[in-house]
Each structure stands twice: as structure tokens, then as C-alpha cells.
Length: 261
Image: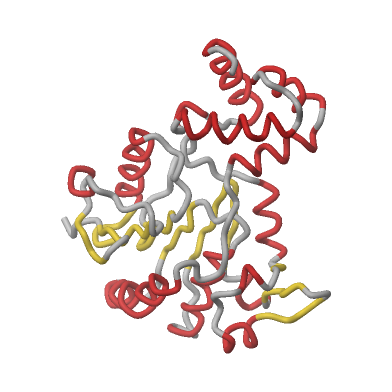
């Protein structure tokens, strides 16, 4: 494999082109993922691969998709969504009847739309704010379109599938009632500033390749973005072992709360 100079130059050029800072990602895992993609295209140096992406927009787009790991589905880890629905949201609604929620790294919208369905049933006459952000513009466009495969809906209860989706050409299209409850926006978690005043932040299966330092900085920013007693919900492989040092208190497994004061 190529030398460190080649890798450093690749990272710098990619940052200028895409605003993706590979220094925030674990180098061994990221180099392995990129190398696998390079070999598929018959190149064996990072800079040759960069030159290929400069010439071919399709390869560049495929690379960004591959890098940002857009794997998602509705009600991913159903037991945790059940805990969110029955315990966490009940507690949050007791403190604030109108919630301000952020789905960070929302990909094709499955997570914020899952949340919108829960809240439409739990508080039918209340319009909560659900902000959904992602780095990938194409994923955000898919989210706004709201059209899904059967596999992406495999965890969806049949009653909700019938209630909130219509079938068109073997695709499942989400209802405008749910679609209109979510606000989509492009956002880079590692570079952009954060809003504040959130009751709930979901950031699940997003930070898997981030360095530990990048994770700590990100979780600290999430803490500041939450209201007192606000909750951060992370993925099933992303337990925050140093949550106390960051400033959180433990709430439920994979749910962390900003202390009341």
C-alpha cells in the first residue's frame, strides 16, 4: 500500500472537495474500507483513486455513499424503540408537552419518520418539531421523497404499515401526514455548529468509525445542545463508557440524560 504522504495528501484533497475530515475517523478501519473500494476500480494508490474520482462523478458519488455508511431501516432495534416510545417519550412529555427533537445522521429518513409515527399516535393533536440532518444530499433527497423497499420496513408493525404507507410499483410511499412532521437539512456533525434546546437527540449507528477523541467532542456538543433532563439516544453498539466524564447521567441502556442542573 502507498505511503503516509499519499494518505495525508488524499485526506487534504478530499476535505477541500467534500468537507469530510478523515482525520476524525479511525485510520485503520477507514483505510481498509477505502482500499477495498480502490481495488474494485483497479487502482492501488490513494492519489490515483482521487484522480479517478475527479474524472468520474459517478465513482465519486459511490465513494461518498460508501464512506457515510447509509444503512438504515424503520424502527431499527425494535426493543429500543419500544423503550423510547413507552418510557423515554412519556417522561419527556411530562416535562414539556411540545418536544424539540433532532435525528442526527438521519440517512434516508427511516429514523425520524419512525419517531413521527410514534408521536402522531402518542400526542395526535400536538405538532412537535423533528429536525433530521445528514451529510449526504442524495440521502436527504430520498428521505424527502419518502419511498422505501419492503426490507427497509421489515421492523414496522403491520398496523403502522397499513396506516401510514401506500404501495406504488413495489415501493412503499409514506403518507404526507408523517412526511410533513419532519424537517430535513444538510449538516456536518464534525464541522457545523449545533442548535440548542433539544429535548431528545438521536445519533445511532453514525459514529462507528469516528476516533475516540472525535466521539468525545461530538458527545460533549450533544450535551450542550440538550435541555436539562434532555436525552441522547445512541446505537446498540455505541455505549458511551465515559458518559459521566462527558457530563451525562445514565438513564436507560443506550439512553443518556443531561442532568437537571
